[in-house]
Amino acid sequence: MKIFQIISLSAALTLSASSLTARTLDQQADSAYSADRFEEAAALYRQAIDEYGTSPELYYNLGNSYYRLGAPGKAILAYERALRIDPTFSDARTNLEFVNARLADRQGERGSFMSNAFDRFATLLTPNGWAWAAFAIFALCMACVAMYILTDTVIIRKAGFFGGILLLLISVGAILTAFRARKISTAHDLAVIIVPSTILSTSPREPKDRNEEAMLLHEGVKLQILDSISERSDTTGLKWFDVQIDNNHRAWIKSTAVEKI
View 1 (cartoon, one colour):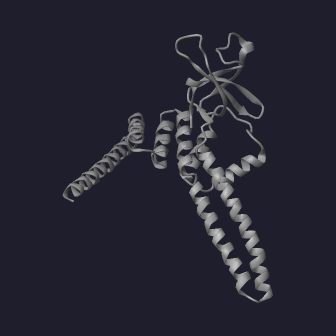
View 2 (cartoon, helix red, strand yellow):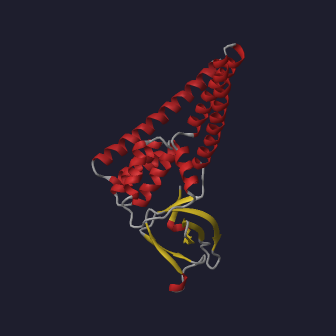
């Protein structure tokens, strides 16, 4: 029993020390940011994320530091990651829209209007938020069923019957939305350009002439990765991504020019 108590106490002290160190790093990063030492702040926020786990606040602060350093691509990447964790984080969404509005390149639509609208709707809540909403709506549906079964009043029975059907359909819709929100939050096919500029190619190799140059894109552009291939012409094994920029543009880009969200 004493051994168990000692082990439990040791584990508690370890967790407490870890939490304290994480808070200390966060405070040091905040102090560096307030003193306009943005490079130091970014390094400390990255260290806190690497050592003690992610959080939307840490990614948000990291994004702010990168923006102050003049790195909009990495700022967008950090804001996107913050919103992956908490899509209701309004400050991160506001800053993301602010930085996107100041990019050198203007992207067209990617995907259909309906799918994009559904994705925007799905990110109004976290996946768990949609799951709880579905549970609450289903509970109301059961209440309507009880009204239909337990009452003899025609109007109340009709309200229970049709209300139950409607709430059941809404509950199913909330469950489907939860699955979509989960898929969005765990997607590995989106990336952001993090270098100042890069020339995309019509094939998975460095363009040999103007005919093989697809387009020039700048930092911060968000891409969808469709495929990848490794270049074996040298010892580095450079990887190329087949990416979709929007509905009308598709090309190859070096993996070193982007970072996955």
